[in-house]
Length: 455
Image (cartoon, rainbow, N blue to C red):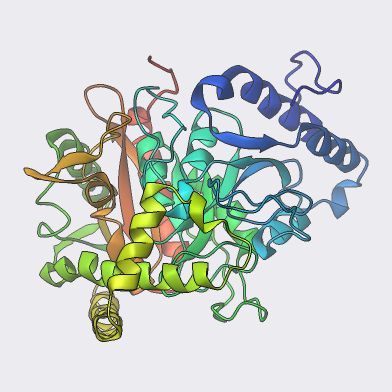
C-alpha cells in the first residue's frame, strides 16, 4: 500500500491530513493487528486532494472522514472477498448503497476490513485485538472495529446478524450500533440471514457513529428489506442527559451469566446513570431464553438459501464454520423454520411492548471480555459453550426483535480489556439510544481503555 503521496507527519486537520494520519497508522499497526485486506491509499489520497479544492459551502457532513468497509460490502472496482477462499475475485461493478451514501456525504473509503468468513462467526481470524494481540477482536465485523481501535480510521461499516457490530465494538473498546431492521440499505451487501441481517456503523465515539448513520440511513426502494421510517436527526438528544428517563434492566438473561469484571463495570455505569437522574426499572425478560433457538432455526436455513442463489461461489473452498452452518441449515425442516419465525414475531411483540413503560433497556454487550485467540469454547456463567454462543448471548435479542441496539465502552477488566455497555430502544428510537450512549460516554470517560498494545 506504500504510496509516493504519503508524507512525513505534519498533523493537519483537513481531509488530506486526516487521510495521511490514518495511512500512517495503517503502516505502523496493521502488520500486527491484521485488520485490513485491501488498502486504497492512492485513491484515498487523490479524493482527499480533490476535497481540498471543494468550497466549504459545498462540502458534505463527512468530508475528509476516513472510513473502512467490512469486506462483505461491494466497493466499486474491488472484489468482495467475504473473508473466504470460496468467494469469487471479480471486482464489484458499483458501490453498495451504504458505501455510496457515505461517499456522497464526503467520507473517504480507505480500505476493506476483515470479516469472519461470510460473516458467520465472532472471532474474525487472523485479526487481533489492538488492546492485546493475543486476544480476538470479536466478529464478524472484527476488522472494522480493530481498525478503528488502532487509529486506522475514524469510523466504518459493519453488519450485524447476531451481534456482529456490537460484539467487536465491545471487545475492541469502540462504539457501534445495530439500527432498527430495515433502516439502512443492505443492497450490495452479501447476505447471511434475510430476517436478521442489519447494516450499520462503528466509530471511535458515539458522535462518529451518529454522523455515519445520518449519512447512510434512509429508505432504499431497490432493497426489498428496506423499511420507510420517520426522518430523524441522530445526534438530537446528545445534550439531553438522562434525567427523567426510565431505563430498564433485567437480571435474568442479561445479568446472570457475567464475569465479575463485566458485572462490576456494568453496575458502576448503571449507578452513574441513576445518579445523573435516570429511573432504573427492573423488568422480567425470562422470555428471551428462546432467542438462541430462534436464531438457530432461522439463520442457517436463510444462509443456505442465500448461498444457493449465488452462482459463482466455489463451494468446495468453504471453511469449517460456513460448512457447518450450511449443514445445519440443510438439516432444518420447514416446520422448524416456521416455528422459529412465529416465535420471532411473538417475542418481537412482547419486547417492543416493554417500551410503553421504558425509554431504553440496558445490559452488558458481551458477558466477558475478549477471550484468547484460538479458543473453540468459553465459559459462560459456569457453563462450557462454543465461543459463538458465549460472545453473542446478550446481543441476539435485538436481532430477533429488530430493535436498535448500541454498544459503547463503559470500563475495563483487571487486565485492561474493554467492557461494552448495550443500550436498546423501541424501533426508530436511534436518537434516544444514541443520546443515552453519549451520556454514558461522558459519565464513564475516566474508564475508557487505552489503545496500548500488549503482546
